[in-house]
Length: 558
Image (cartoon, rainbow, N blue to C red):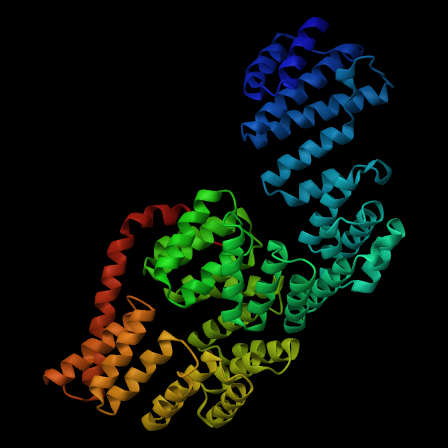
């Protein structure tokens, strides 16, 4: 038997796990049942079970692997009770090693509570920094903050440059000074590394939602100490996005792509920025390249969702967003993307669920709050929308974006519309480049039939803002003023910036019909034409996506 086990071990040590899956299974079946007093037999079974489970894990059979690891662990417990000491190197695998393998299976199966219990059962004195870090991340993921903080601190005491642990502490509210002090216990010279202290300060600012200051700190850090560092640049771009500096965020991500085209970090957010600008070809190219890098991370699938969305293939886009969400159910960009897509196809209640999850995971996320408010307003739930807007204003402070959120809600009630306009004017005064506020104010003027005021506002800001939506809204107002040629010019600019934009195409058709004299210049006629255009576009989209309906029905929605 010893000779046979040695040969099995040789197959395992050679890394021939696909061979081991067959060999270990056959050897296990050939062994007689273990007797309670046959300690050597139990030891043999234990090591063979671990080898067999290893091979199952390699072949992605995680449920079966967990089962055999659990059986091996039970044998190990019995041997420890009987104080069995093996003289063979094969029998020296500890129960901690086996528990860690069980944990890996449970993580692959997304059974996080069982994974936490598995690691919790390891006595603290026997936990390596690796196991402590895994436990810290599990506690953090499950919202169990105090044990998570304790575990992160233990990791930093033993490995002061374990920066993921430092990030975890900062996310959980520990200040940068305390984290630095903790790192200094095991690495007294940590204070001499200026770049590290600046990095910790920047991440602490990000963790406390001071995104503008964090971006400034990271920009200085990258230019003075960590030139062309992709991780720092991705963090900088994320902070710029969170603060509403979308153009600079896109520029930084473009730089990341030029430095490392295989980088996946932040590329989901980059895809969303490209999609917002209607850069159809760039989104498609990015998605194709990312999916070629990896199909096992959510970022490529989110990029695929945006690529499908700008091509008006909404069902396919939702499928890709769901695929990303299945890979990581706490991925903010997956939730935002799917929420936006569900909202665009009038599935407001499902969209609300996704936006709520975003605000639960990241309360200060502007896009999550904005999406939630838009869905509530579309569902005539104005009171709930106002609560969200006020809470966002309280958490993020008075700035152009929180003013916009409040104005979005106030503009829906006739008695508060004037106050909404004042807020939008204040937002634009603070940030003249804020396209969303300009658009909303111009739209309010349009609804009041103050077309001259809307045209004046849009022309003023289009000198320094590039936005397809603003050009198209300007076209609508010019058409209302019977300035048809200039309206067509604006629609054409909008289409050049965002090819296939349905509202621009409908505007061109309307103006052409009016100039041809086939449609009277009345609200009823214009509404009827818009409705026909919308029906035609909807039919075209549905025909494009029919082949994805079956796949979509198989998905388990959030």
